[in-house]
Length: 340
Image 1 (cartoon, rainbow, N blue to C red):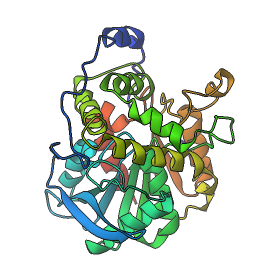
Image 2: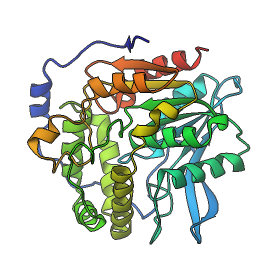
Image 3: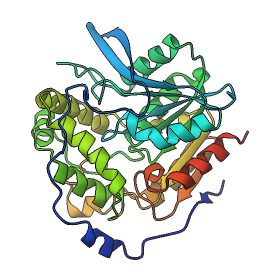
Image 4: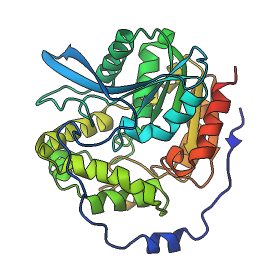
């Protein structure tokens, strides 16, 4: 199946744009609590209370009704590692405006959810948590859509619960390759923890601009930098950093990549093909770094691996096309979901 190309390539001037955006970024303007207390969510925030691994936990989520006549379908939006449910705001509005009910959880260890003192993270566990949330809301079947790490989670969910997955949508999912097998050095949880303790607004912005946005930057991205930096530098920063370290260990050591051919649900891949995201690329040898995170290749290969998959490409866009080209991405998404 041939890929659908969306939008125009806008790489010209990227270097000059990067230079203009290179001025110093202030420290996080806000400080948020361990469960992102103080940050304003775009829709009412609820909490699902449940027991897991011998602990009482809370999972933050938004449950947004259709803004027009309901079409009977629900879309579940799964966020990425450096994102939260709130970062889906524009997509939520678009889907609700097209008649969808939209459920947007913050996964365990992230954002408005509990940061356990100890937790055995796995994509299977996070999928089970999400499935229990949906069951509590009376949702038997849904379109499951994930971005970045949420894309890996969405794939795992569809593998575990194919009968409950109406369609799988992955937006620049990480894990379309096995970095460890390709030679990226392993980090211990302690090493990840020390790395996460050092996070700053400046470092977050530099990383996201260079890796996610192809050297470009928009003022609206600053809110999400502030969200992440404010959480990581708040009063619960050590617990936040520890959970982040455990989550990175999960991502690196639990590739879903090899099971993509086992997917049995209609799948839509939405790929910004200038993305270079790859876990561990910061410590990978130059010859390895050059070979990983090439989404122009990874998207096409994933389409070939997944039965009944369709690839939509956003040329020249990076890791978060839903934030880079809001109107174009959302109109494309709704049009694709309306196809049989």
